[in-house]
Amino acid sequence: MQESVTYEEYPLKIPLISISLTIAVYGIGTYILAGFGILWALLYMIYCILIEISVLRGSCVNCWYYGKRCGLGRGKLCAKLFKKGDPQKFSAREISWIQIIPDFLVIIFPIVGSIILLILAFNLTLLMVLIILIILYFVGNAFVRGMLTCKYCKQRELGCPAAKMFNKEKE
Ligand code: SF4
Image 1 (cartoon, rainbow, N blue to C red):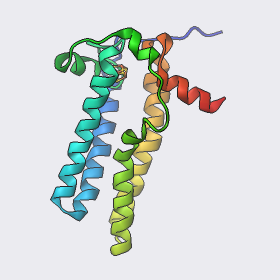
Image 2 (image 1 turned 90 degrees about the horizontal axis):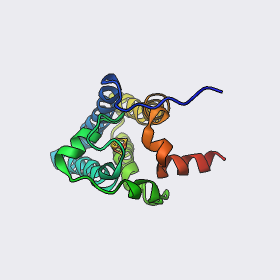
Image 3 (image 1 turned 120 degrees about the horizontal axis):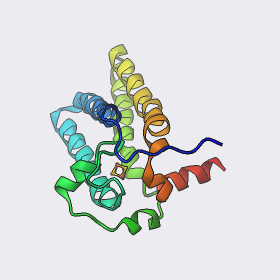
Image 4 (image 1 turned 180 degrees about the vertical axis):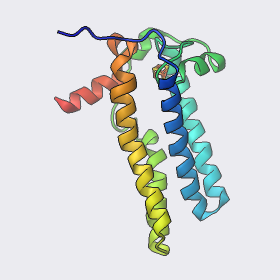
């Protein structure tokens, strides 16, 4: 049987890919919601920033990669912004689908916004942008999590509530 490999610190290209994907999703989401006016685009950007802060404060402070280069590129940033938490808390946390709804709103808002804009005035460019966004979010994230990050994550081996939840779904 093949021994599982985990990274102490991820090769730089992995967080760079993850961060680029996140920025692309937020950027496209902002572009779509700008169709309703600059205020909606700004509100969406603020929401994305708040979601990132909540991940850093709620999870990354307790993560094994706190202060290190993790696969999603938040470990070092977290150490610059927040005090180290309690690593025991990371694996002890139980998460449910309801708790991750706020995270999904970063994709739900632009999807709903696009549908409304398309109903009001069909626009092929907007439809293409929406399709790209959906592919980036779902396929891109599945690739990044499945092939580049979670697969090599030390915290997953020590205990990760998200991995536990998704694996339970697969059983
Ligand atoms: S592995 Fe996840 S929880 Fe840990 S620091 Fe990176 S993004 Fe945060």
